[in-house]
Image 1: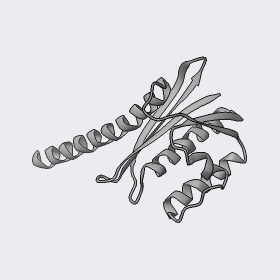
Image 2: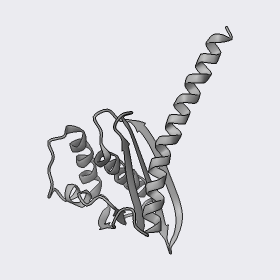
Image 3: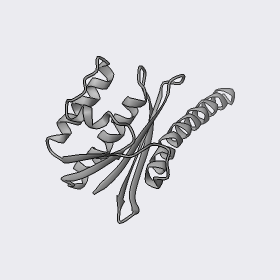
Image 4: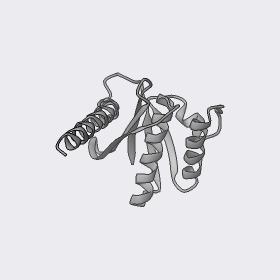
Length: 152
């Protein structure tokens, strides 16, 4: 099984977005995206969250072997303890990734970002879109709350 992952981070808004897509026979079988407020985050953290969410999907589906396809070259270095960081936020996600590797056989494949790899481009776009949609929901909720107070 192949799963493409990507993450985005908006530093000025402290928003992280991730996306992953399950690809079989050159077709997207499942995709997921989400954004969240993440203080002291960065694009590395967002990408790690994407990998973890993809592995959680595998656990939930009973998938025991997966290839994670990513465009950030440090992901496998973190997963296999070749790379360390002093960032506590990143370290907590790295620990989770290492724990998940104990129950799922994970291999990693790096692809070059922003090239003609359609599935990598797809998850890149989804991760960015998740942040946009998150902001739209926040603004809509803020406007609805404002109107509710005005109508009292």
